Length: 358
Image (cartoon, rainbow, N blue to C red; front, top):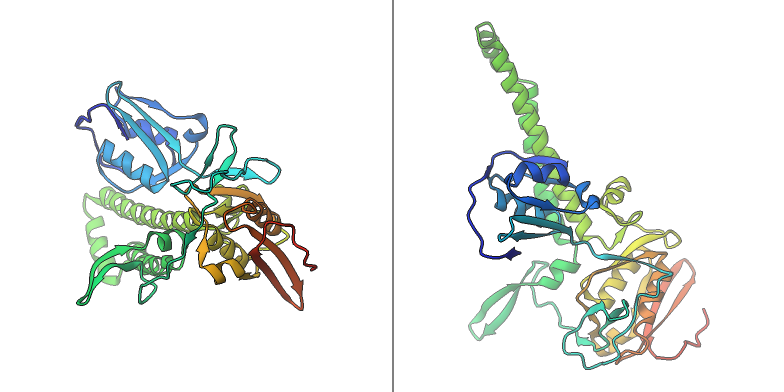
């Protein structure tokens, strides 16, 4: 974001780094006559970048990679950066509320004047994915001659993590290539040893050794940056997070949660998108089958535009969220069934307390 008329200030950045605290990184990037305005908390936030170029382009690259908000004040020569993470909610906080007006034009999940979150109570009709495969590209307009306009399925991009698998495979391939390069530097062939020995016998021995060390360090740094990019992509796409939901807890907890324990507290991420999609993802990770009578009969879902994080156990978090839609246009109720080695979350239409017995 720019305040005032953007100016071109020639200040090239020709280096890159990995896991460097932003409080140390920015002074090495920003021109000396600019003021850096960041919080003490953010100053300890680790960032990485592999882009070289003018200073403002590098700053934008860092902000995009690490989900930061950056503001350039060209009138006062001040740069501000803030975290753009979703807000964390605890189960004992009464911060979740519902929008009283079912006729809200824009479906949102935002804070009202009392500081509580409002959720749109007006459902939207679910549209089937028209893509032939799991590709992110779908047909937007079609004629008798075929598809005339294609677009990216933003919902799938935001809610579905399967598309990351192809990225992971591509990364693994690149990693193997990079490892080969590193091994080549670390373990040269016989001819390379003979050539190196010949060169080292001359006057350039210290320079040659320094060059080899520099190449090895650069190769290791590149691998580290690629691994960090892959981990951060998984972190941003996760529906369940370890600890308090921070990136550090994500890494220390083993990364992506493939199998969750319903009796263990996690940070559950209510993704931007649709209510039932998020609930289904949470249930799958906790080995629960979802029987959704509302969706099956009416093909509707409730949208939200604000990502929210709620810490707690699976049933507690799911109950807290679904109960907020008890007075929706199509009221949402639910029950849990366990037995016979199977766990089921049953979602049905009713604004009254269920009389079903587990």
